[in-house]
Amino acid sequence: MLWQPSTIAAVATPLGAGGLGVIRISGPQAIQTAQAIFSPAGGRALSQSPGYTAHYGRLHDADGDFDEAVATVFRAPRSYTGEDVVELSCHGGLYLVQRTLRAALDHGAQLAGPGEFTKRAYLNGKMSLAQAESVMDLIGAAGQQAARAALAGRDGVLSRRIDQIADTLVDLAAHLAAWNDYPDEDMESVEPGPLAACLRESLSACQALLDGYDAGRILREGVDTAIIGRPNVGKSTLMNLLAGTQKSIVTDIPGTTRDIVEETVRAGEVTLRLADTAGIRDTDDPVEQAGVDLARKRLASAQLILVVLDRSEPLGQEDLALLSGLQGRPAIAVLNKSDLPPQWEESSLHGLVSRTVEISARTGEGAQSLVDAIAQLLHLSGIDPAAPLLANERQRACLQSSAAALEEALQAVDAGVTLDAVTVCLDEAIRPLLELTGRKVSDTVVDAVFAQFCVGK
Image 1 (cartoon, rainbow, N blue to C red):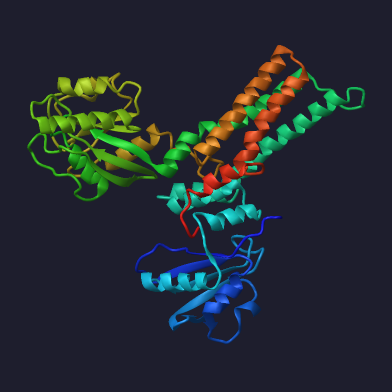
Image 2 (spheres, one colour):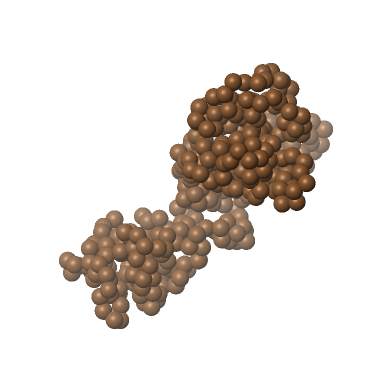
């Protein structure tokens, strides 16, 4: 490899008071840099230390000793980055962590950029680009299923599936090129039927990954959720139930909520970015009307809608008008106040909404039924987090480009055009697959991927 890296250092743990803070140093002079600011208690120099060993000692700079620490040594290529790495674990006070980092920089290390450690792991062949992107998903995982999906990506489940598709197409393109360039040679002929079958199989594999994107994205990122309804039906009480604390003011006075109250909560295995909105109704109060306008805007952009209806009062025209405007939207009718005598039948909502759930937001009865309904509506109940899942829009765009090129190749075969045209389409299908995993990708794309990482990772 012609690329000659420098030695870099950064704080690898969140800044702030804590039991431990970790400074990571990586590069050709990582061990020498750490040795210049760390003295092992046993007296053995870090340069004499094998990999996968930890040493207790003291940190020092030009002003003397300032903390005790543990230095963990990793030797290339058996490290996270593929380079020599030393991780210094000191006490987690902001001053001590920053002083340790400054000492490393004073001895020749350069401050690492966002994602630079993982970028080096990719450049050194320790992981594919898709695996590197899963690192950030692991860090940001908000639940068990999201963590399992991210770990599967980090383990290379998606990369291996993409490589299988790409390798099949590369072999097919090579056969087509050889058949076209050397028609007189003794080689297997290319028949339209088997060629089309191979293309359809690859297209089907791409489409299966694309079909699972939305569910996987919701699993990782969560879903924007609007709680809507007319005033005083229990929207704020439902918000507080899901949040597990009082986030919204609850009174018997209609129109209490004027602004949008937001909170991120867990509902089973999905993260809901909840927005408790003002009650939607016609009003002459300009302040309340401003809240209603905000509620309608949030409703328009929501990925999931919880329509709260008061089961203890007659179903009103405002309720029906609100429901009729949600045709085709992912919405659940939450029939609130199930602890009181019902004033209308659930059948009154037939044809207006696909799912209904009875609940008492005040007592919590029916909360699990709501969680289950959300998972079913978002198609999360059958998702396998250990299966290959696309992690982001970059990967999705690559796969969409490949699928489009495969469709063109199939059309060319069906139209009976020359194999040259099919080969061109195959090349267009292979390129984005190689870009997805990083086997053949521009520096601009690589830089854009790692710019999204935090410093220290």
